[in-house]
Every structure is written in C-alpha cells, then in structure tokens.
Image (cartoon, rainbow, N blue to C red):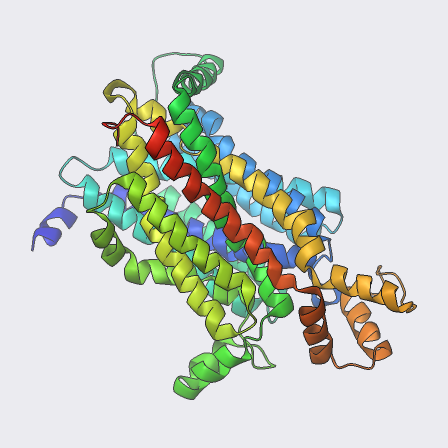
Length: 482
C-alpha cells in the first residue's frame, strides 16, 4: 500500500525519463554486448574481421570518452537545456549506428564508435539528474530503485534479442538499436518536460572550467585519489564482460549443451533464441548478467547492508574474481553460466557499495564534488581493459593467433587473410591440411596452447584490487572514516 502511495507522487516526466532510460539501455547494450564480436568475427559472417588489438583500441578509447566527457556534456546540458541535449544525443546515436553499419575500414569504424560514445556522453548525465529533480526525500529511494531496474531491464532485453538477430544478420542488430533510439525521440518530444535551465548567465567555457577545477579540488585528497586508483583494477576486470567474454565464448565454449538443456524443458523458446546449428549465441548468454541482477539484486542488497561499504566491496570483488575465473577457464556451457551467476552476485555486492562508500567518505560540503569524480576510475578502466583485451588477450587466447603459430610450426602454406580469403576460410584450410575436423582443431589448440590461462590475468587483477583495498583499509584510512 505504501508503494502505491509513493508511485502516485511521481510525475509524468519521472516516468518518461525512466522509459527513455530503458530504451536507451536496450539500444546501447543490444549493440555493445555484441560489438567485440562484430569487430573481430570473420568477414564472411557480415562482421569486420579486425584483430583483437584493433578491437581493444576501438572499444577502450570510445568507452573511456563515454565516461570522461560527461564532465563537459553535463555543463552543456545545464546551460542549453536537457531536452535539446537529449535530441543531440539521440541524433548522434542514430547516425553513429548507421555509420558503423556502413563503414568497413578500421579508421572509419574507430571514428564511428567515438561518435556514438559522444552521443552516450551527452545522454549519460541527463536521466539520473532528472530522477533527482523529480523525486523528493520521501520518494527518491524507490525512485532510484525504479531507475536502476529500468537500466537492467534494458540491459537484459537488448543483448538477449541482439543475440538472436545476429544469427540472421548483423544489420538487424543495428536496426534494433536505431529503432529503440527512434522511440526515444517520440517519448522525449511528447512526454519529457524541460526542467528549469541555468539562467545565471555564466558562460559555458567558465562552467566547464569550473567542473575541472572541482575535480582537481577533490583529487587533492590523496587518500580519496588512492581509492579511485585502486578501483580502476576492479572496473578493468569487470569490463572484460564486454571486451573479452563474448569473443572467448565464440571461440572456445560449447553452448549446444545449454541449447539442449533449454530445449528439453522449453523447446519453443530454445528454437526461437538458438541458432540453426543448435547453439546459444555469446551475446544472448551475456544478457544473463542483467537478468541475474533483476532477479537477485534486492536479496543481495539486503544481505550486504549489514556490512561496512568497504568490507562489502572487498567481499563482492573477491566473489566477482571467482566468477571471472570460471567464465574464462572452462569450455562447458553450464559452468560458464554458473560463472556468470557468481560474477553477477559479486557485481551486485560491490558496485552499489562503490557509490555508497564515496557518499560516506565525502565531506558534507563536498559530496556532490566527490560523486562527480566517481566516473573517473571507470573511464580509466575502460582504456586499460581495451589494452588487456587487445594484445595480451590475442597472444594468450585468440584462436586465430594460436592457430597461426601452429601453422608456422608445421610449415604449412595457407593464404593470408584478406578480402577474398576470410578468417573462416583460414580455419577451414588449416583443419584440412592438419587432417582434423573443426571440433578436433579447437580441442587441439585448447589442449596445447591453453587459452584458458587468460583467467589468471583477469581474476588476478580483481584479486589485486581486493588486496590493495584491504591494505588501504588497514593502513591508509583513519579508523573512523568508514
């Protein structure tokens, strides 16, 4: 009954903002969860056939800008109005999705993704600010709970559907994201009410300069700066869900067991989401992270609320490291799914506590300034995650790279990959010359080159974050801080 009373207090703009967030997350994650595969998969599948290094550079740089540029775009939104900025963001999204679908060169795809991320940077500060503006002390807790639920519903639906569409054509994935953004154009036009703009007359340049000065003011606190640096490690390990996990599953994991298990219980569902060869796509599998959060977040939050935020973060990151290890250490579809569940539980315990902890340690008169810097380690972690998922992942776990090493060892003669000879052609020819089936070839590479060793890198980074947080808590923090 209390919830119903609170629900009646939310205005039309609150609900419009939440629906806009849902469709934006649908569009973004539907595209982003499969983006790594689109970049590196064989050209004859409609993908681009880039290297892991090129993939890491594109995703890392663009995603870094997505989290760094809100310093500037937030000031622009306050100055010219939220509604105008939303239209700018959606225009950049739509044109960017079309550009990535159209271009094929590394340079133009790089530019197109940066273009999309600039659109995301315009969008990112708007909706959370609108939730804050349209709620009160009484309604904010449930209001932000609804908001985060919309984030995860969109984060589940987008990749879940995209994983099905990519089995038919990559074009359908981009059309799906463009359609979701087009819906947001309509919602914003009809239902989004512009809040009061900044009418103080402060020049935009001065507003942006002030934002950077504010960040500098918070980073003078060396203890807080050290905490942010440590958290770069956590977000770096976390981001491999987007950068490396879909590629690893595509190359090494047998998801037919998942398809068969689902088919035994819900045959119609399995046939509707599975591929023609009876597998579940890596992108659809990745959507289960958001699904687990939708199902378990309230329970996990209730369990960790009794712990200090820093302790909950350490415990959550340690659990997440176990999930990461399982996600990259095995070929069994069921164990991979279990790893994703463990990963999600760790995420649910640690990620919300990150924001809560910053709110607690910030001085009373600087809470907004401190919260404004919480995106900095995420931005830096995306750049680092891109680098790790590039050259390091390629030399350790990339199937094509490992196969080429074996081809050289055996002295085989196989044409270079190009416009007329794809990655898939290379695999087929190598298997033929080595007298193996494609399954036997994968098993040979798995057993002899140990691509699963990448789990030690990714889990080790997360464990290092836990160790450094423990030392930070034990030796750096004043005992009364947390």
